[in-house]
Length: 432
Image (cartoon, rainbow, N blue to C red; front, side, top):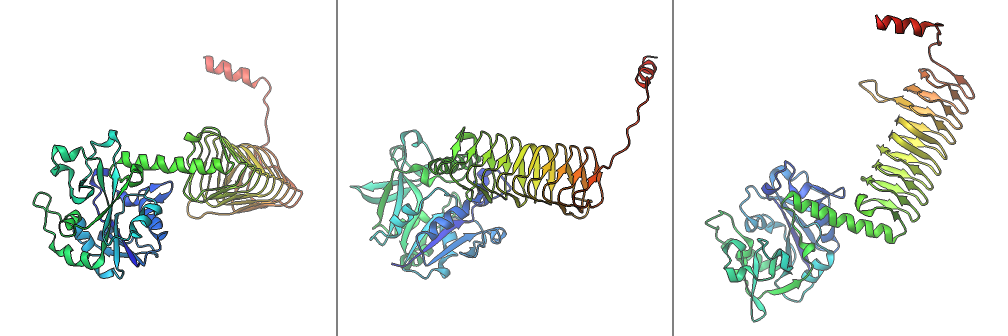
């Protein structure tokens, strides 16, 4: 059985009150629409066609889909019309681009059913029966019609079966009946649900999994979906041997990779492209993205890591340290109040408190290289580009502007001057 998938992503997202369309908002670091596309791919369709607006086509033009444009937002039936030329399979599965939690199992159940035409209806829990979903009306257990909530009678509004907007339709019937759908006089839109006025032999697949069909229409919806995905990620990591002291306060990205034996303290945020090796510990209130952390590494508390940074085994980043685009060698440490940017540091090197790499001159970024077994004293400023070779020592409070040879001692600060009894003179002057 050959199946094409059509994903509708042309809505205006007006209820979201955001300049970013709902399909492009991130959940755990991934755009909403990518969740649907990747889930669709798990079902091995012949084609995946995304219908969107002109201004969004570049944002959804992934190399694994075909993109078509709906010129004007005239409803779901009108949107599907612009996918017809790309359909090549016997059957078409149609779903919305704002349901990131739908699973491949749901879609496979629909796509592989023996019925030529089918839809998924979710069973609404009692506390959600006031929600304005269209209702699926059955007659003696068989499909009768779909009625929009605003057009439903009081009896129909208490029906627990709600329309998910996920359909399987025989492609020839879709092409035959789609042009016959009339514009709704109230909304001036063409509703895809009206195709079931012509196609009545429809299997209704009932699902109790209400959360799986959670659509993104408001910021509250987006927050609920984020919470669902984060809880799923937390369970996965804990089941794989990651210790989360306060799981509800730790946030991951969809592509986070963590080995077993890692411990993560409360209020940690892990952005995209992060890998953490076994035995490492991430202390509270740290924020990381785009970094590779090897084994037995310490990060934080209150650390900020970004920009393709790498940390070898046994290295340590302490409190209020920011690292950007840098590499730390084995057992190298920067424990306090430090900024390291665009820097490569060797093994067994100590970066003292208050050290700053001045990597930006206002126009370009410059590199700093620090060798093995280097001791950088506290409150040191390294003016990039600069190289500190193996075994060098930098005295505290130095501003370094020239390369330092191996095993050299560098001190670059003003000589201290002491005026005996000078403090008494200053205080007396202030009291006048």
